Length: 181
Length: 321
Image (cartoon, rainbow over all chains, first blue to last red; front, side):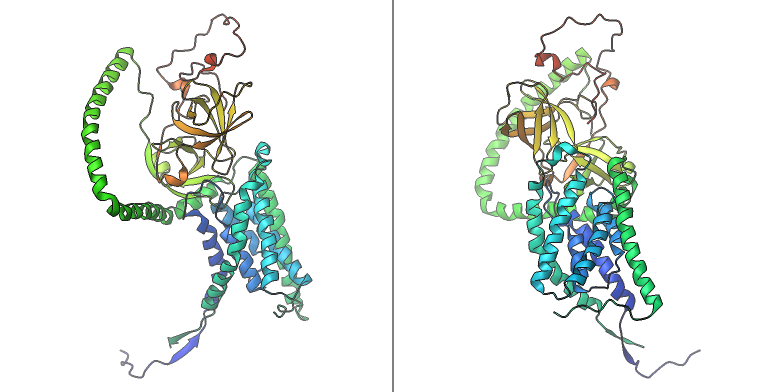
């Protein structure tokens, strides 16, 4: 039988690498589910939070999410969002590649340029999503783009807030804990 | 802000290859996604099981969300009720006294109605709901209009069954999981419901417009007979929705039809009832089709009375939405 330990446990500071790497993925997946719950909507009103979160993570921490993450995260988003399967896989993968190109072309950035880039990406994403969702239904397409105008506007306005949320999650992700060893 | 880390990955061959492989995987993601997308748009819902897997997983959390929504709504009502309770009480007392008399009269009418129907050997044409369920989630960020309900194959729900509230039709079941099902709302752009005007039976189709309103398309061309406030009920043509379910009310007229608003707004209804699918051929109250009748004498071409579909005798007419 071991003798009872009497000396005080030593405190060491540790970081959690698995938490640091898994957090962006989990946050984006949670954000994909977010539009489902608050309201039963009869029109597209909620911003595509999963996509906003992906853009925000990509802009805050370039290189943290691999280029191919768009396919996996997009697959999850397709399962919950109601878009045809494959829509987010394609668009999110293309977004990751496009952001890489933009970053290489314009390496210096500030708040306004990032917001501008994100606004353009969001508008293209929602409009392409609209076209994809109604691809099999040609009659309905002519009148539709007006329908998503409020959604695009709201998404662009809400994007800086998503950015702040991502920054807060990022600080939490990299926090170091003191544990007894 | 400073430019991000230089992406040139040193002289390490391994690092260079893994960067290259990541880009290849990214491009493959776009191409593979495109292939999946093409097969799900132009093929026929080979990925429904994935949606249902996700719906089943998210159902418990979403159910809490639905009940919170309902609770939040009633909490506001309670707060407002404190202010108006006195006057409301007096008014309700008077109404109850009146309603009691009316209820007795109605009961007598219902009894008589049932007796007469028994004599005519008519069955009730509104079915018992198969299951009651919560509307637990909806595709609020997509332009398609789907919702998830908290009943699935465990409750006997099957694809194609109509879903309604007390106010009117909400949609139909599209995919069924174990404890949850996805429904296509009537406001979706791919939803088509055969209807008739409640007042005179003018036949029409109602399509969703994707923004919460509905497009009424008349079957007969010519002068637009619709007026603001007209109510449409399902006609039962096509054999999916039970005839006589209230559906939509006209709000604005267009040159060849009208824009209508659904009577049961999915945003305002938490509880829905799933009805069994309606099959006109299996309805025992309909006369069997007579095989060897001579063709009817030619009618005048514009005779909407002939297409009145309150009791569709034409078991062969099939236009699935």
